Image 1: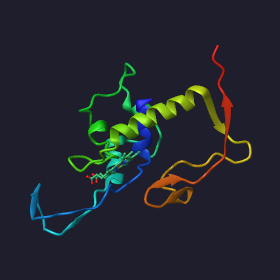
Image 2 (image 1 turned 60 degrees about the vertical axis):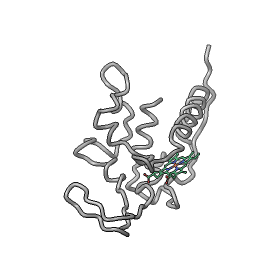
Image 3 (image 1 turned 135 degrees about the vertical axis):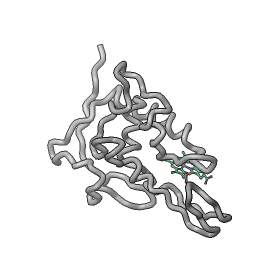
Image 4 (image 1 turned 180 degrees about the horizontal axis):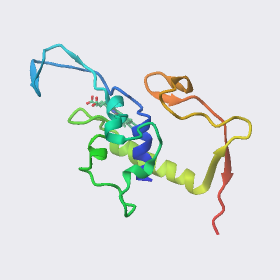
Length: 156
Ligand code: HEM
């Protein structure tokens, strides 16, 4: 479930450029001088889809976050340190633990009880986020509504 969640947020960031920030004073960072009053926009979209890091960044492959024993790769693995849909540092999202716990419970409950299948009335939608025509772009990105068939899972 955690690998599924990490991969979902990696592939399709809710806020691809996080929240824009304004430098309150001159700052030196890694050889760059960021002047007071500069607007800073973080391109996390690029980080999450960097071919050099991920190899196949446009594929949905939750297992990339698992090691050979089926455990999540450690927190210092480059996949985890480069994963930042909630931002990073002291202005990162304070709702992250809440949102992630909700996501876990909500999605696990749905998947435990229901099987989500392609609809017979609509071809399967391409999920590649480079094809923006399939997404609604407002404050955040989300897939356009689509049909799917939901079947009850039977557990004996
Ligand atoms: C999937 C769900 C969510 C995502 C992807 C998300 C993402 C983000 C991102 C990217 C930022 C900006 C971080 C930065 O600029 O470094 C942010 C800020 C913030 N988020 Fe969330 N968020 C989510 C849910 C929530 C929830 C549930 C709450 C509150 C209960 C919340 C409250 C806030 C607040 C107050 C800020 C501003 C923090 C600041 O500027 O100091 N978020 N969020």
